[in-house]
Image (cartoon, rainbow, N blue to C red):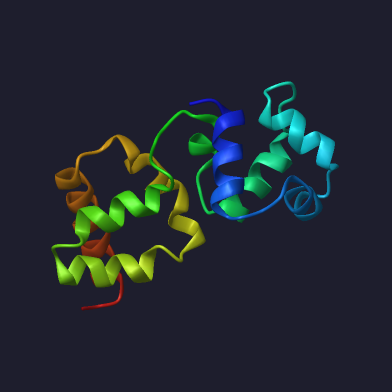
Amino acid sequence: MSFAKRLSELRNEFKLTQKELADKLGVSRGTIGMYEIGQRDPDTDTLLKLSELFNVSVDYLLGNTDIRNPVDEITDAVSDDPELAEFWNELKQREDLKLLFKQTRNLSPKAIKQVMRIIKAIEDEESGE
């Protein structure tokens, strides 16, 4: 799916007009219109703002993946293990690990669980548990 279509879908899902979205991004309504018809591409800063606003990855915005946010994939993978799920809820807030979690998008749920167990073992060892 193209960026133009993704942006239009997200804007409508969040019930924003082009003008409201433009105001949030600090651009003109016309710029949003051009994005949505594929006549113009946003700069990096605007992509990041859109990603944060809609809580999706830049890859999702650009149509490189159908996974809205790598965090969702990890949450699903560990949902059947209460200990890992609780640990994941703590970890997903950590800025220093966000890049690591982005790398999980090509991993199976089993592999994601293995990565989480390794991180938990390291965390436990460092905290003396």
